[in-house]
Amino acid sequence: MNETLAPTYTRSTNYVGPPSTASCPSLPNYLNIFSGQDWGTGSTSSCNGYDGGPHSNPATNAAWNCASPCNLVDLLTANSISWKAYMEGLSPNNICNGSGSSDGGNGYIVHHDPFAYFSNIANDTVKCQQVVPAGTYTGGTSACNGGTPSNVASTLISDLGNPSTAPSFMWVTPNNYDNMHECSSSSQMIQGDNWLSVLIPSILQTATFTGDGTATVIVTFDEPSSGTYGIKPVYFVVAGPGAPLAHSSRTHYTHLNLLKTWESNWGLGCLVTGNDCSNTVVPMTEFFIPSFAMSTSPSSISIFSNVFGCDPARTVNSSLTITGVNQFQGPVTLSYIAPSNSIPGVYVRGPPSSGTVPLGGSVIVVINATGSGTTSGTFIWTVKGSVQGVQPFSFNTTLTVTYTWCAHCVLPP
Image (cartoon, rainbow, N blue to C red):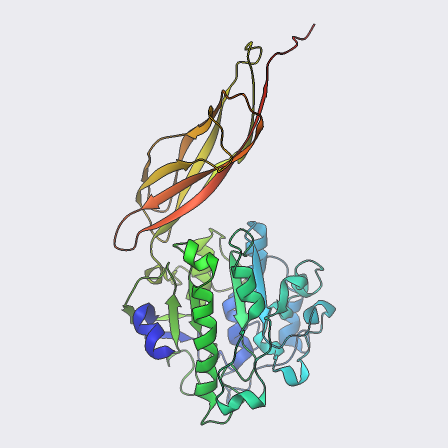
């Protein structure tokens, strides 16, 4: 998979993962990428840091008892960004009991699941149920024989099949066989590569990825297999329609840069308890094509019309906000697409272009919905923004128009 994925899309040859030589073993790195610090779990002494379960020692207790916001989920939730985590081999609702124990022979390892280490996730009845089994289990010692798995992370793939409900941020962790850990040295690479060779094409073929020109999937490792932590690079690739093609970078990045990238993408701010607020930690914008987001406000409007003109307000305005993402700037071409149930006289109109979206900012244009037809109904219009170029892409948002018509009206006394 590495031989096809990395050269096709965008890769780093100097993404070192662990932020420092003390980011060892696994758990400190999962906590760094998820919360901007390792909470004291790391160690430079023969990699003798903590890999224990949630609130099992002073270090993991610090994360467990931290005050919100202290992790990525806190930021996503505060900004109304949908999210979900998929853990291969996890038993249903495993982290909801607050223990986050490893899962027997299924290969789930709790110290590869940072969501389990924060009480404001594991003890929250809504949030903990968003950490789910990845789907069909494909690991185990028998899979170390080199067989190609099927239905990898089927729950994840199913969710991506519906773009209207797919979470904006999705995290998937393989089990301890598919992550190239437990199999023999001769089959470890084969096992992980076979797993990715099924998972990544399945993701790229979903409706979410074929319909969204900004969608990306990131593949990386928590730590190197050997060598100096924080210095030796680990595998890092960004694929999908939102990734530049055939791009390679030698810029030095760590897990903190990736966390900063997610924060920057959705305008989340940073975790003041972590190390992601440092000015030296920059987002990895070179791995993502410039793009934009659009929304209407209000997103639903009502129009009343009648033949005698007792209520002459037949046009209602909505604001279309277009926000640049990943250093995007420039004009966005706008079009207004009628729904299949549209009727004559009810329509949405607006300018043909956004004008110039400023670097790091947004632009607001006024669109209007007009009603003069004689048939009542609810009509969902699509507003499409398009950008042409080497990698053209588009983004859609909607405006729901509820139109009511009657042939007469009764004036108030």
